[in-house]
Image (cartoon, rainbow, N blue to C red; front, side):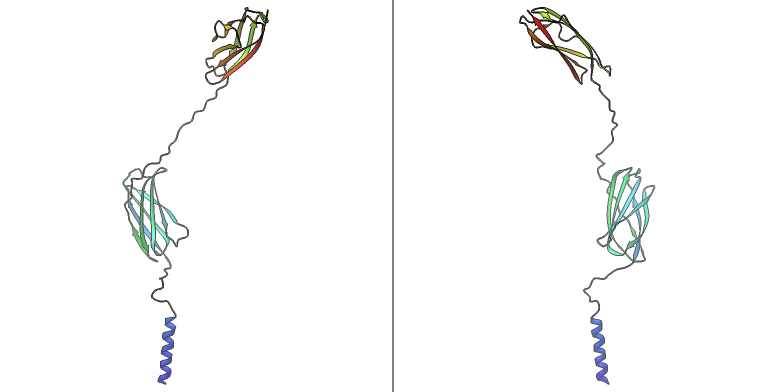
Length: 226
């Protein structure tokens, strides 16, 4: 009978040995909660956002804390229990990030822990800003008419040119006369005289009109005869 009892005892020990060893990691289950109280150094902070993350938390938990005076407070429930729960805090003035802080704590199942930290408010302000854009439209000058008298003209003769133009924007217009030969009396006015060369032929005379942004031009051919 004693022999039977010894065998039973050995069997019981063997069954215990098949369980969790001392080297196996302890698996923590359940959820806990964290109560946060964070002092604020900047008085005009408008929003404080806390993110709870850990390697075994699939989706980070995000919560907005209540800003009351110079404190940000809040209670975050449903946090999976564990040792390495990281609380990252971002404080904003409007949409500009001004302070940050990080703290790692243990969350105990069915319990409430207190999380406190000092925020680092040396975060540089956003380099972006806003600008008011005022766009205008420029319309090019319009040549209404151009006259040349007489045409044809004798060699060495004089042709009187005149151009009429307008600008839809009311811009001041400038004028520039050019020709393949010959000479202008006033090359930068709406009306000018052109002295024909002493050689018969066809000569191109061009007027360019600018509003300071856009240039329009018109070319006519003057026949010089001998």
